[in-house]
Length: 395
Ligand code: NAP
Image (cartoon, rainbow, N blue to C red; front, top):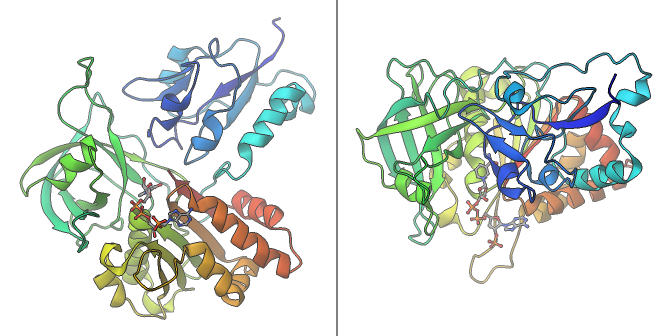
């Protein structure tokens, strides 16, 4: 029998096909086909560069194997195989069985990263990866509305009609949009990933449609394509993706949502779901939402109409003339009593979405609040993550 080795794998159920790991891998060990993103066991040198950049933690999968899974094996998977029984003792099948230097790199890569995500225990089961590059779904643009009043920060609300195409989604999931045309090598463009900003029963209740929140990026191939779409245009989409950044189906769960800019998309979906399903009788939602100015804060107008007992809103701005810069993490510290109460409640679920840069600041803010409660934030965070109550999606 071959000596067991540790193999690096990607969980196809959780992966949202953003291809960030593939673009990051310095030794080109990560590849994709129409269906999956996979790791070539022969090329992977365990450098761990791909671990912290993954928005979902789907990259952080390891198996001890006697014969590594081939690339073809991995392309064919809908879910990860269980750890095979090697008859060895527990330790031999644990990540700690990696040699010391690799284990240390892995521990380093986990610092501050979203870590291995778990869905809330009561979340509905999501459908994932129904449509892929080889077999995309076609949606028709129903509406395209400018959300911001700043030409330098052009954010659009796009409504896509799926017609008779089955495309079941849950709040917190994403879809891929395939920009038309080909890249410089003549290959079709890879889909770009966007969070869905509408709830499961449709942007308009009981219509088979979804909405996206998209910011026009300078020279952005897909964002310009999407922001310029006209009603009636056809769009090729993939997905749905994401199996962990989901809402608990418990109306008494308390949601603590932290977002910047277009990272507000899933929070809008959560809020609409709560509004439609539980109304004011829910456990409540608290949101810390950061934007440059009120003019660039997506959904500023509609948010103002959401009742305070459903959604406790903290809108913070970093570039309002004459005012000091404020980030979400500053306001979290300022609202420390409220946040402490949430952190201590086992019914609280935390969601963080938006700029990668905010993750560290938010982590520090929670750290200082946890410390004031005599708790260690990393311990509390890891326990919450394990219980499916701590969710990060930043990129
Ligand atoms: P933005 O306008 O550039 O930034 C929003 C706010 O965040 C600004 O007030 C900005 O302040 C502030 N900010 C910058 N650095 C920060 C930090 N380290 N900590 C806390 N706040 C910080 O946002 P955007 O252009 O809409 O971009 C949103 C980001 O979310 C994009 O990177 C997008 O890819 C990501 N996103 C992720 C998902 C997802 O993971 N599912 C979904 C949608 C969007 P200043 O610029 O004034 O410093």
